[in-house]
Image (cartoon, rainbow, N blue to C red):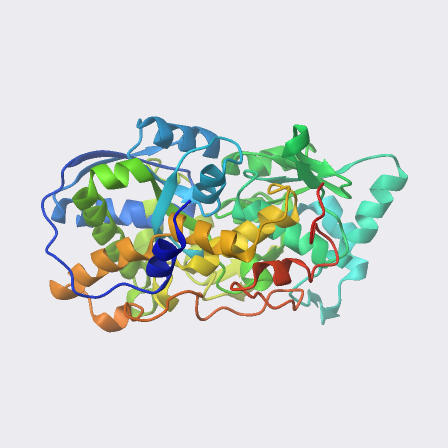
Length: 448
């Protein structure tokens, strides 16, 4: 773990006096991704020539699932990858595979949804307020509780899918369920139980994103939390209804990051900075001029090389709308945010929120002092490296200082975030006080 002095330095911002970045030490790179629309900065950086501008010759390769992707970054088969925001943290603290992974780039905000099968949706309907013939959003998980209770009375488990134990989707789904009075269960790694289903009202299991709709259609799960386009695919196929987006659970929540091993970053510092420059430019392209490039981005992502879903399905969310029930299309301009609101900066508060949820559900089985959360965030979420790459873009006249946070400032807590759905205020500098506010979840010295 980094020492307190280093932690303070990393959390305090970075001077904008930067040395010129040298040539890439390793110009030929293989980067991994999962077939989701939020891999877009990687695809755009390739298609728009931003990687080539940095002297980087990049191969983008889709991976089978998040575990394979992480393992291949750790072994060096991949130089870096599109990752779940919790993956570098989970690896660093040793939940699952232990490895020192860092991120200096946040790939996007928002972008997920929770979908239920048609049968479950019909059972939820009487418990959802309506205006006219349309449900009032956001929809609380309290509307799902009678459905779950009915399943239990029939001796059946209510099952939902998420993409990985340290995924945003797992924590968002758990947050939504708990806010509605449903316990999503606990992990007990110290006892060898990593199922996450101890004392669960709703049993959550891992399903790779592209397989979510088919798994629900087969009846293996009754719903899921996933990124796009796999919620809109359920609508498109007529097999399910997205009930809530993560923007409604927590506006402008952090979602994916670009991750590399700490050793790789130290071995190839110029390559890393040049990768970041290309990704920053790609994220800016995706959001510039009020999302003017999103239709072009949809066309890119629809290609089999990238996401490989129908352009119509991808456009449902990428162009600022979201379809719940068939025909219930609503404006959600910030469903996918890639650059605005300083989306690309890896704020320590993002890391701390994920760590609090790991503690809440038992993945961190014992209490940790507040300083541990801050030190872990500082080690893994590297705003100092981001600032160096961003400042070089400013110095080269490719971007403006106003595009970024003030790098001489604090830059601890992510700005422009709304309130969480349960109304509990997130206090990143006092993580234990935040954890202790939840009615459902571990707190204090409790262990699962």
